View 1 (cartoon, helix red, strand yellow):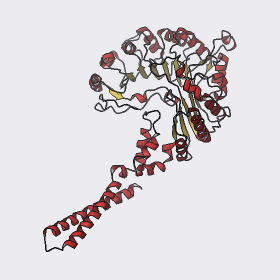
View 2 (view 1 turned 60 degrees about the horizontal axis):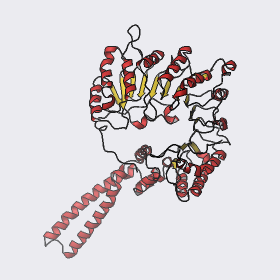
View 3 (view 1 turned 180 degrees about the vertical axis):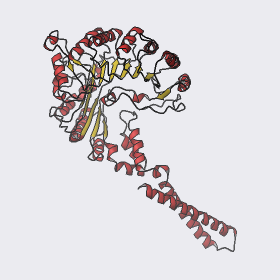
Length: 546
């Protein structure tokens, strides 16, 4: 059914409405005028009238909004809805939509693109998985395998083996594979063995499948594995088109064969038996001459006092444009990690830098390196600096002195992103209001500020004060992008947003646009803003996701 046939149904419905009006008029005359027809004529008119009404009901169902809207618009709406979080074991979005109406089912079954995102958990039905793969046609697939700490089914191990067998059958169409981490439920200590019991249940099947699978079209591979056992070698048969890799708590030394020719690489929470030597890290990065994003959390390499004797100059990655450094829970050794890292590699043309949960001591060590090697992090090319407080919104406790050193180092910065505790954000904004030597702004090219506004009680007054002072102080910021911690704006925040809109270009972005956890977002850290609609952003009641 297409838009033209819907238009024909509309015209037909209008004709039926006219005919019904005529028959109602005739039936009324037969009922009130004795000289018009008789009982037989009255019965015939009423029968025709009922048939017309039935015809109208059928036509009306075909020209309802759900029927009249063109297929391509429905597909666009459904594609956007598929990114909305949903309960872990709820039916996949295309199945749920196909159960709404025959028309939706018709459209979905002829749209393979709606079936190519496959989310699997231990509770997924193998039959349903098989059906979704069939309906995806020949399209390349995005696989999200989630082993979160949900209660496994009674036939957990057997079912999981069946699920992995189904995924293996379509491995030649995998384009992106994401193994979601095992999370820690509330009230469960990190050392509690119950946290990892489910992961251990599926470990062997998972390891065997990922080791022997053939993936000729795989581009993105992500493994966030926090099980009791550590994942060893994966994709040993090769992945010729692999370009983006994220590994967390995986034995990296067993997977060096994956780290060649990459454009994006993230290494998080290294296993103590899987760290690299400095030489291995240098050789790995040298094997990725087109690498444009690198993310490191923790110490993924061992210290080596003799390294600089063999390699006095660090490897210069001219293609590296984006760098993420996270030192959460490792503050006691942050300074040495920073110096060791820039002994291995530098990024002279870096454009975006994300610093996550760095202490004042680490930032000082980082800035010491940049003063000694101005090209280590693209001091002359950096356009975007993101300061992030970490998963728990920890205080970085950076004072005005550290911020001042940072801004003087990155004088060509155009976009500053602040996602920290309110105290850190306040110190940062106060620093921007100060002047460099000669009475010029610290960052004369700064054009855009993106900030987590939190709540009015936290830092609601800081941003308006900064906006009011920026022209007086010569701060060139013209655009302010705001978002709240929980995607809901307090009334006080909305009030000062109105005030700010009269003095600067204010843009609103939603929380799901702010996450930096996946390579796809890290490569594009500057997101397209939403049109700021204050009525839409008012505090609204929350609905549970299930």
